Length: 200
Image 1 (cartoon, one colour):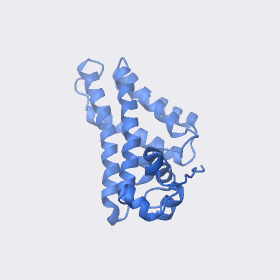
Image 2 (cartoon, one colour):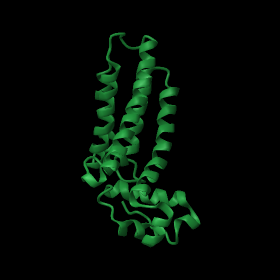
Image 3 (cartoon, helix red, strand yellow):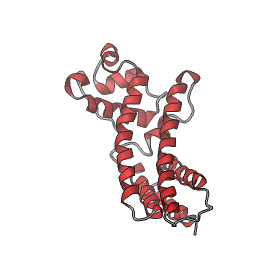
Image 4 (spheres, one colour):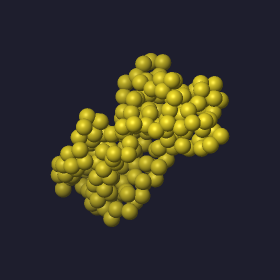
């Protein structure tokens, strides 16, 4: 995927646009694979201007990821809340992820999965940032599962922590599969199989 470049200092024009461009770059190349030259070239600014606007590469990464995740958490929360049952909510979340991970307008997968899985010790804080966001997504799933359990949709003795971990693992695996070239149809088949594991 080609990342469109902009000219001029983003702060003077559109900071959000600059963050979205940076996100696309981190998404495509990963945090450690994205150089300062990549960022200045894509954003159309020099290094001093980048530091003046965003302080540092880690700060730019955090802000771009926060922008992305604010939108994602709102979308996920709405899907889970609107569904009449926990099962339908989790399935809607998985199916939405399958479509999103393979959408042509951005790099495949999810920037949380592709940005950092393992990183150099110097970038440990970035690795922890992405891990924390994965835990947040899992926690959102857990809350909906616990609501379903309280409503009698799931067995009282069921370990909802384990079930949330299972479906969080499915989503993370779908993201990696998308990065490796899986199609929307491929991922939706994974969703079908995952939903067959739903406790009776």
